[in-house]
Structure formats: C-alpha cells, structure tokens
Length: 198
Image 1 (tube, rainbow, N blue to C red):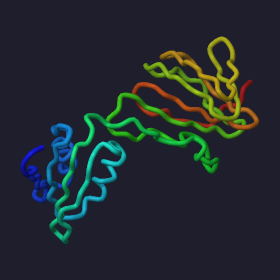
Image 2: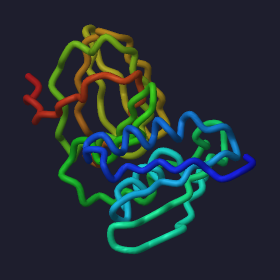
Image 3: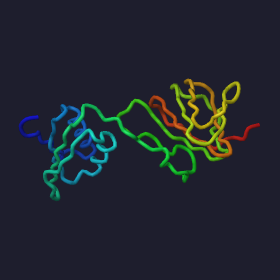
Image 4: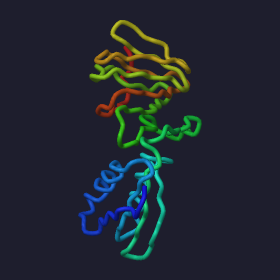
C-alpha cells in the first residue's frame, strides 16, 4: 500500500460496536494494506480476538501509547486466516470432571469440534442425534457406542461416523473415554449422567 494508512477513530463509537467495526474494516483490506486504529485505551481484548481468529496473518504495531490516546497500525499479511494447531491433545491433562474438555473457539467457522471426556463407567444417555452428521475419533480409553440394533466397540484410533438423526448413546469403559467430535455448526450437546443399562 502506498501513502499514509487511513485512521479509524473508534473513541466516539459505543463500545459494543467498536470490535465489529474494526474487524469489518480489516476484512476490507487487501493483503499488504493497513489502517491506524485510534482508541482511548490499549485494546488488549481486541488483540486477543485477533490472536484467536487471525494468528500470524495480521500485523500489530503501536504508533502512540498514552492514556486516552492509543494508535495502532493493523496490517493484513494474508488473504485468509492461516492454518494452525488449535490444541495438542497430549497437553489436555485428566483434571476434568468430564464433558467437553476442549471446544473450538474460532469465531468465523463452518464447523464445531469438541473433545469429550467420560470418566470410567460414565456415559451419555441414548438420544436421537441432531440434524448434522458427526464424525468422532477415539483418542484414549475405551467404551461402547449404543445404536438402535446393537453396540459398537470404541477403542483408541477408531473413527466413527454418526449419521444425522441416528439414535446413539455412549458408555465409557474401565479406563474412561476421550474422543474428538467434528460436525457442522449446531447447538451444543448437553452431557448428563448415564442411566445404568438394564
């Protein structure tokens, strides 16, 4: 980009509207272009949002830092958000009480992903699946997937397809069960204690 970057002064904009306006302006940039954000405070939460959704694909350079007067040059370095590692499952230690122990938090996305952990013997009661297909990948432990006509063994490495609306229920084995789910965005699954099998 040639010339002086445009200034986006958000100091008179209501706080609830500032971040959407800033991200809108960022989305309009071409690669290599930038704008200068003028704000009344150090926008740390905004920087966290940029890091969550656009790590490595933007530039952030303070030009001025004084109470009531912060100016940051924000530059678009890539045409889209960059591929990246979201979580290392080896780092998810077993200090959780079960349920979703990790969820994707990227704001702009077309899919949901969660890591579900069930303690030994715990489970998810039988239910009719949502209107989306779900893929699960068993990471650790073992268990059983209940279907309308039988059970499927769940062991580490298994990749299981759950067709939309299919009946399913889960029970962890003696070592508990941890698995990754991936599906189109939908309402979150609520995990409740399992009802003992008859």
